[in-house]
Length: 187
Image 1: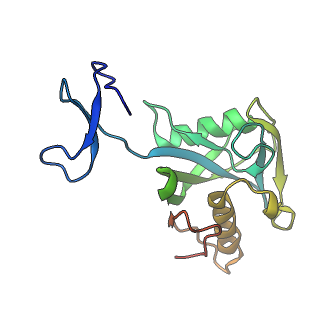
Image 2 (image 1 turned 90 degrees about the horizontal axis):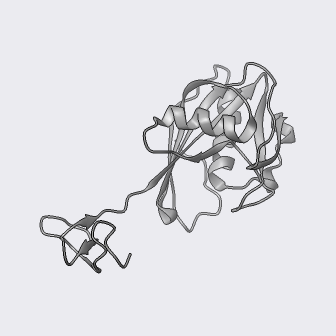
Image 3 (image 1 turned 135 degrees about the vertical axis):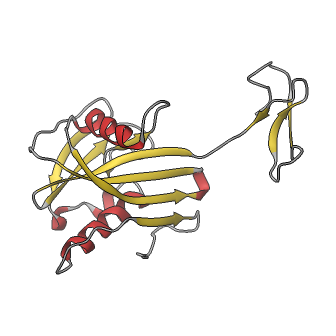
């Protein structure tokens, strides 16, 4: 950041009085510009024993498979963002069950929230953001063609939780660092 979005004057990177982190501070008006993580919300839609994935028509990871998810907009809840992104990317109407994975992606300053969701009807499609959408059984998942580690982790947790004698789907808190190409399943 070079200039203040409040008054257009130059900013400097320094620790403001009473703070403990460097921030961009306007040298003219004193405005402190905080930079915070971006929230990504999405769904893991389930229809019977299959999950709905979509193939990306946008970068990053064009052509790779993912769960429907995207950046939250101002003025919406995380639940509304997950429902909107699912509808936008797969043309599917889902019913949220519960928050399932919460991943802090440290190296890109993002937090991803994936909700477990029911897809009551096998009705879905594609959009300008997706090349196609498709239901996959566990043995059909294109593991080597998944767009993101976070998606791979959510799917692995889901299939492991579903396989339990008494299926339980606990909220999973995950921290992903830049060194991790694949995250080992943790509780």
